[in-house]
Amino acid sequence: MRTDGCCGGGTGLLERADGEVEVLGPWAGPLGNTLNIEPLQVRGGVDPEQGRLNRRSRRCQIRDGVREKAPSKRLRGCGRTIVAAHERVEVKLAGGVSHFTGLMTCGLVWMCPVCSAKIRHGRALKVEKGLNRALEMGHGIEFVTLTSRHHLGQALADLFGRTQEAWQAMGRDKSFKALKARFGLRFITVREVTYGPNGWHPHLHLAVITWVPLSVPERGELEEGFWRGWSHQLQRVGLSALRGPGVLVKPCTSTDGLSTYLCKVSGDDGSTRSASMELARSDLKRARSGHRNPEQIAEDYVETGDLADLALLQEYWKATKRRQMMTWGNGLKAHLGLDEIDETDEELAAAEVGGEVLLRIGRTAWARIISLGLRVHVLEVAERSGREGLRALMREIAPDDFWHIVPALEVVPTQGDTAA
Image (cartoon, rainbow, N blue to C red; front, side, top):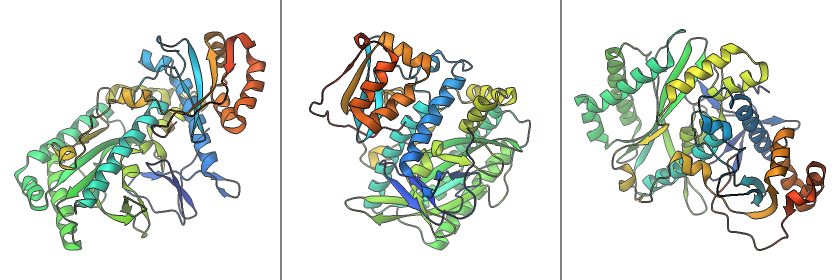
């Protein structure tokens, strides 16, 4: 079940926050020092639709494989248990993508690969909107990655805590405050984790908004200021960083689309990527050079049953409990005119995306689908063959009394895109 990440040239996929898939080629060089968005390769090239199906199937398999080992009852019922307010499960189709409604969702962004994809998708949409607004207001945007040196055997909770302490201390440092005032810096911060030959590697990705776009010399000044502040605060908490990979600064530019901006991050080879996806959708990235992200560790455990991988997962779950994946700087949303109330992780995971109801499934038939491991297959049949395909499938699963094909009616307006 393991899928290797991309390295070198070729073509690749970029799934944007709006749900569209962009084919890139040749594939962009790595942004940051450990992660690269995974190009899903199929015979004859890249198939975006097959890539989406592969991701959905893989996430569901991982969730099923770890749910009994996870320290959360919410994950154990996620995608399986019918919520108390419902007596049935519905299969809906929105924009050619099917999904279930009426099921419990856990909303655990660090633990559940299915809910994490939905939550990160929602966060990416908000980031995309905010960065677009910043560009429209004449601001500049820089993409900054902050890392530290680490070694095998260091506890993730300790590294996470020290990294966060160093970043918070930077905000109080007089020199860094002066840098913030000079360029009008405001931040969107995302925390990520990988594991490799040198152990756990927590790091920060920042979308840094400046008053105006920076010149090349000003960008150099910004990078120097970040390096001085970051390296100093790391030393204060007992960590260190190498000059270069410790602080990486990439310029973001805008390309005028049909009616909006798409904020891009420039790569070393001149290619560009969506900044909101790079910032918020670590679930679409595959670690490289011997590193694994937590989803890859979980995938390997499900495939092999390796208890060493299970131990890593349990350490990761414990270290990330109650930690925020993404934070916005104080007053930034108000400055950008993003006045809407933020959804919680649980609300994003449970959000109804609308669509046409194809099938209603009673509790007995749903239990049969669960026991046979056919949840993903039901969704694939709905997308491929619609009502008639579902009718043929359900007749093989349960008596007609326990399910019902819903006749074609007026489609419920879709409120968003499905992410899993």
